[in-house]
Length: 354
Image 1 (tube, rainbow, N blue to C red):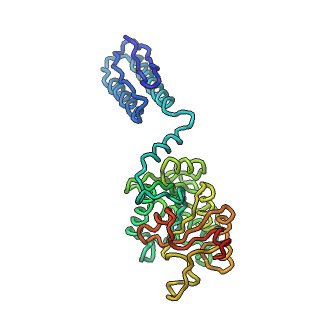
Image 2: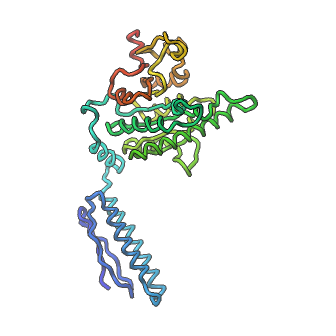
Image 3: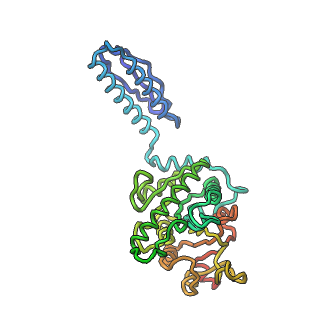
């Protein structure tokens, strides 16, 4: 039997199969390694080999069949390695995929330049329940997914932390339930929301990954910072579930922590209200809204924007906080573009004395 070769157009290398006695050769496909579909071509050729293997007559010797199968798999692995060596240069596959992703971005509204290219979006669990008393309102979930989709199409790298208050809140545990146990239940509630948001995003064609601080590999990836950053660079939305994985920490603190870890440029807290007020605007129609606040004002005036741990993390890592109404269409994208939306909390606001 003649030796079979596979040519690699960009490298000029040939992949050679040694003959196997009693086995008829099949022609090889030329592999266009400079094409993004190179691996598919290799796989197609491999499947053709498998068809040939299954077409052996019952009279074929067992030795020939095993040898052919082994050789086919060996050729498949060698071909894929050749493609990967050609495609993955010294800058790495992640950087190359990120570059391709960036160049293929759809232009944002009016081609305006983004102020924030990497954002941490904190979605309130209570906001997801809409007008209901429990669970998720599908209309609200779809609306949030569409907002995130708009961000991705505009070129923003999006990390998300979701709360779980629409299912369970550890701080409001009933008497007799230990606080740590209640917090763990609350973490599981955030994972329920994360998986539903992932489904909503993927129904819109947005590639999404869920990472959890408590391992549950059957439904989500474990949280690994470098992997999360790689996903973001490759254009995927990353949703972080299960908070920090530790009791006594809020999801706001988890969002601030993850924002610092993935180098987010802004922390967007998406709620049911359009900013920060000096008192509850639902109970007091004369409540005063702030356009700008300092970190110190948030803590000193007890404005309950976020807990003090989350505020401190943002302050120490110089991450501005934007509080806005996520139910108003286009709000989150306008914030990423730098428009005045909701209330901004930042160090510069403190210096300006606002």
